[in-house]
Each structure stands twice: as structure tokens, then as C-alpha cells.
Image 1 (spheres, rainbow over the protein chains, first blue to last red):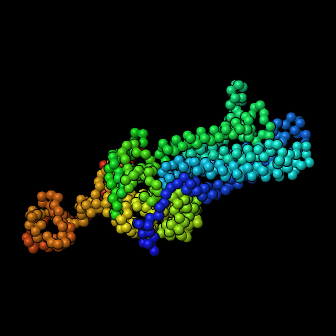
Image 2 (cartoon, helix red, strand yellow):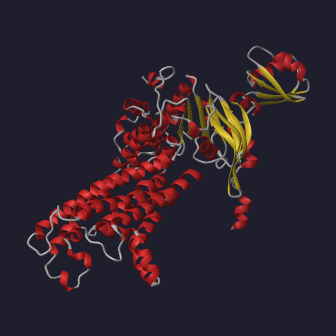
Image 3 (cartoon, each protein chain N blue to C red):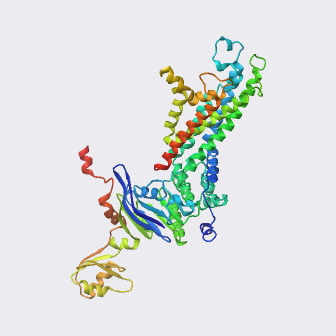
Amino acid sequence: MTTTTITSRQGDRAPYRVTVWRVLRSEWSKFWSVRSSWVTLGLSVVVLVAIGTIASAAYSPGTADTGGPPLGDSPVALALTGMTFAALAVGVLGVLVSAGEYSTGMIRSTLAAVPKRLPVLWSKGLVLGVVTAGVTAAGALAAFQLGGLTLKDTDITLALGDDGVLRALTGAGLYLGLIGVWGVALGALLRSTPSGIAVLVSVLLIVPGLTSLLPDSVGDAVTPYLPSKAGESLTALHGSADLLAPGAALAALAGWAVLTLTMAGVRLTRTDA
Amino acid sequence: MIEVQQLTKRYGDKTAVDNLTFTVRPGRVTGFLGPNGAGKSTTMRMIIGLDRPTSGTVTVNSKRYAQHRAPLQEIGSLLEARSVHPGRTALAHLMALAHTHGIPRHRVDEVIELAGLTSVAHKRAGAFSLGMGQRLGIAAALLGDPEIIMLDEPVNGLDPEGVLWVRNLLSGLAAEGRTVMLSSHLMSETALIADQLVVIGRGRLLADTTVEEFIQRAGGRGVKVATTEPERLRAALSGPEVTITSTDAQELVVDGMDSRRIGVTAAQHGIPLYELTPQTVSLEEAFMELTSDVVEYQSSTATTLKAA
């Protein structure tokens, strides 16, 4: 038995070959075969749906015109209240997927199988982006529909078919998908889960507050391009002076992801694994 | 075939591999030996392209590793055993690697069975013992049915049964005409498996020889005889089973005859002997002697005392 197994070669050697699609297939299977992917992805959806539903249920007419935050007045904004937390979850998931390869040593097996290296990075980004965008868009939709049940008798009820609603909910998925991709890039660039998460949290949560320390002219020019602000632009029903247009916001987010991915790609190909 | 040519790797001002040249040929087991820190793992990492050489070249079946269309089919390698995500099952780990090459599921099942992992295929790799992890690494190395198998310290952490299994597996692979390279810091253990030896220390080549030659040079397994009449003794002892070498004008090393028979034969011929010593030098000692100048972290009582 043993000898026949080893000897299955010579003459009839199977024509194995590494292709871009196969690398993508491999990364797809790697993503779904660790528990942390399910847990983190599940967490981001649960947070999105639960917080959105609760925020909608807690809405009482009148808070809108007592000077509440401008975004707090639409069913879409209420449904997406959990987006900040969901962004942290999917960003962390992205970091885990790439930096985890280094912390576990898996990277040696991965790069031995795919020595050209770059297809691994693109595939990880693509898998995470598509999965996260799809799942969180569905989560956003669920939050909106569930929230709608409690909002239907209030003054701010909106239907799915109303102007901009679908665009905003899809925007939430796109935003979270791109944050996931950005997380993959950060993890691959820094090769460390703690560093990756630290940068992620800083840029998403801390930097937006720090820009107020800048001179107004600079701060106002920079702030809309931050990932979290671009996310607000993508999910806002109506444009506002201090936010980018949705198209520009999407481009800004993609820019963050692509720029970081490029730096990660340079480090991946130029340095020892 | 692995061809390493003038390979050098520096990390900052530390030279891990220093102008190393050797060839690993098909059909035999090549032992890659050196004390800890000699540069074995770094060399192996460069062979499969994980590290980039500072200078020099290394080819696998006459191409750079990364230029192969199906690298896992050219060379299967086990570097550090923990090259696995602990959260993935053995099966999922091997499937993930198999997907990159289009290797079918039945081949994955084959290597799982070959490595004796069938009962734990659905267990997470993080729960594996060192020996199980090693078996999983070897299964991954065999996945692509490769021409060359390169293993870094493969018997590390294996129980005696596992050691025997690796030994038989490797000789079986070499007998099929495959190239087998394994590293170790234990000479005696390597001599049991290997035919060829490449010994390095501080990144430099110390010896590139066969195990047989190494044993001979280490003093063989024979008996050292000192006599005033070496020529007469040589004639008296010679026979089909006996090899006689001489290291000194009045010394012979006799292989194939025990000291008692040598003494009796010498007495019958009236040849005076003034030393008759069975060689006790072990392979391990010979190896340590070869590498003694270059041991990276030599223990030294003197410096320890001074420091204290």
C-alpha cells in the first residue's frame, strides 16, 4: 500500500499547475476553514443588525428637531448605527487573515506553494472584500427592515424603494468590504496582528477626533477623506457640505485600500518571508 | 537536483551563509549537517525562495524555485514544523495547499494515509503533538508527488516508531530515484539514513563527502595497531575481508579483524606490537571535531565564571 502510493509518478505524472484562479480557490478555502473568520464575520453582522434594530426601536419622534445629530434623523442612519463597530470587526478580520499567516508560520507553507507571492495578496483581498461586502450589505438591509417595523408609525418612516435608500444600504456593504480589504493590506504590510489592529483602530476611531486640532482650513480639507468619514458619505441619504459625494467617497476608500495593498505587495515581493 | 552556487546570505553584518557551493543529486539521501546556527535552515529557505540570497544562486531542477509552474511537484519541503495555522484541521490545511496546484482530493487522502494521520485528519492542527505536527509537515511535503524532498530536522520530536517510519520512507523515496535532502545536527542519526554528507559550520562548507568516506576519515571502525614492522604486519594480516590503512609510518588501522586475532597473528609471525587499540572514535566525535572551530554558541566555563 505504502509503496504504491509513493510510486504514483513517472510517465503518468499529473499535470499540476499553479494558476491565479487556483490561488483564489485556495484562499477561499483558507478563509472558511478557520473558526475566527466565522466568529468575526458573524460578530460584524450581529452587531450591525442588533444595534441598528435597537437604535430604531429607541427612536422617539421629537428628538430630531431638538437638535440631534443631522444623521440621526433618518431610518437609514438609525439602521446603520452599528456601522462603526462592524467596521472594526471586519477590519480586524482582514488583519487576522493576512497577519495571521505570519504569526502562525502558515506563510511558509503558503509561499512555498505560491512562490510568485502576489496572487496570494490579491486573492486574500478579493475574498475578504467580496464576502464582507455581501454579508454586511445583507446585514444592513436586515437592520433597515427590522428597524422599519418599529418606525412605521413615526414621522420618519421610509421604504426600501424610496430615493437613495438602497444606494445607502449598498454603500454600507461597500464601505465595510473595503475596510476589510484595507485590513488585509495592513496585516500584510505590518506582518503583526497587534500592530495591524492598532493602526486600524487609530485611523478609524482616533484620527477623526485629532483632525480638530489641525487649523480649520487643513482639517476641513483632510477629514472627509478619512475612511470613517468616507463611509458616512457613502451611507448618507443627502449630501452635506462637510462630506464627499458618494462617488468621490468610494474612490477615497478604494484609494486607502489600493495604496496600502500596493505597499504590502512591495514588502511581500521585495523582502524575505 | 539542487544546485547551490556561491550562495551567501547576510543579515546586517552577520553572515548566515558564506559562499556555499554544493549539489544534491538524485537517487540518494543527502544529509545536510551542521551545529545549531550553522546556516542550514537559512540555506533551505533560500532553496525554496523564502529568503533572497545576498549573492550567489540556487536552482531546483535547473530553474529558480519561483520559475516552476508547479513548484510543489518539483520539491516538497518541510522547514519548521509549525508552518500551519493551528485553527485549521489537517485536512483543510492540505486541501488549501492542494487547491493552489489543482491537486485532487484523492491525492490529499493518500498523503494523509501515508503519514498515518487518518484518525486525526479532522482535528485542528493546533492540538497536534510535535510528532503529529511533523507528520503533517511531511504529508504536505509529499503532496505534489515531488522529484525532490527536502526536510529540515524531520525526526525532531518523533517517537522511535516515527523515526523508523521517516527512515524507511526516505530510503524508499531515494530508491525510486528521487532526490532526498535532510538536515540534522546529529551525525550518528544521519549516518543511518544518508549516503552523502554536506557538512557546514558558520555558513561555510566543511565537508562534502559520502558517509563511507567520512567514517573512514574518522578512523573507521577498525583497530589501531602500532608496530615496528608495519610492512610485515600488513602482509600477515591481509585478506579478502580486511582493509588496512596507514596514518603514520608505524601505525596501521585494520578494518575487518578484531584486536584479538590481530594480536595472535602478530605473535605467530613474531612481529612486535606496542599498541593495539580498538577505535572508539564515534561519528559524533568526528563530527564535533570537524565543526569544533565553528560552533556558534560554544559553552565555555571560563567566560561564564568571568561574567558571574
